[in-house]
Image (cartoon, rainbow, N blue to C red; front, side):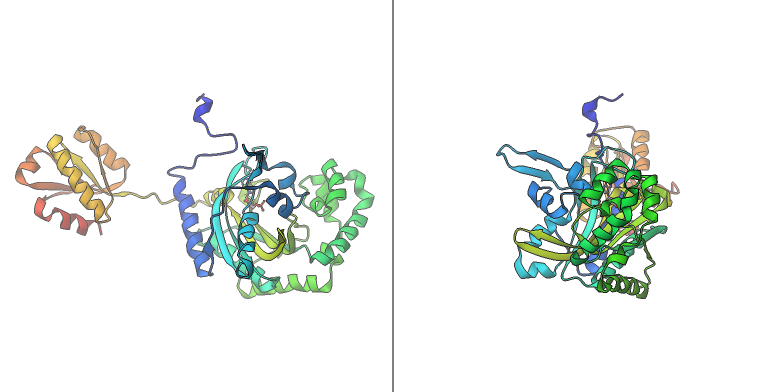
Length: 417
Ligand code: AMP
């Protein structure tokens, strides 16, 4: 077994070639599509003051209760590695004054939650997310869901399901809690211990429980919308209609509540059958965050990168691996020095190339050229140097041609097009 020092921490992974090509595909598509909708990138620090998360995520959300990487730094400050992206982004936008209350921003980066590592749950995972600040508006929520759907389709994901629900307005909260509490009371003893606690702390979290016994009870409950105002039900209705107009297929899931406490009105989740128990790829919702003395309304989503890539692979999407335009093969020290100059010229012209930097056999160099998926090999030895030519070999069909050094650059540029 490899020694521990060579391994990343449990629940965290190195992401490298070739797997990283799929990451880059998703990230590049996200940047391009977000810009089509007017979103600009933001990069907030990974480390924030702990109260930022405690206050904004809500003290009964699982993330806050159990999972934050929090510590005291050398100056005695309470700090936390960000468990999600919204709080930091909204901190930034709240500080901008009125301009921040009508913004569209996106982020890409790692999040940290000290969960028990298992399939689909990592301690460092990555999210691609957007936030659109502004007063509640069902059209904004629908556009946000459509954007997320657009991104997933663009990367080639086909079998994802969009589930939407509403948590109602802040004013509905009391009626919803009381209604659910009354309905659950006769079954209190049959709920799992966590849910019995959740009944006291945050009843909505009972709806989210994955325990099969609890799920049976939850399935029999009246819908949350039964306890909401007509306006809140109409808000959800409008979101669904606008989604239909935009050609986005989504279904209502009456027990969907999402884990964080800051949501109001629309919440949604995108799931995929290939993922097993942790089947959510993405989550999103409308929220109001209280930061400092400011209250910032908005809507946003986060795409879980690892789970989305797992789903893509399950659907057979493979990364396309980049090759090399040229591999320069040098036979002898003089040829190596001349090739080194040529390599630099090629790269300055935007052509990719690589070569051995110490003398090696022809066979070893050809093997490297193959492995690098080079399209062409440029071969130079004593004879070529003496005749002032290079030998250009097509790596696919093995054909070779001689090119005079005077024309080498122009020829290489032409064949690489
Ligand atoms: P959340 O911020 O909890 O709504 O999560 C949004 C998305 O991030 C989820 O749908 C997952 O795809 C992903 N995610 C959340 N927690 C983890 C985790 N511990 N490991 C891997 N992905 C995660």
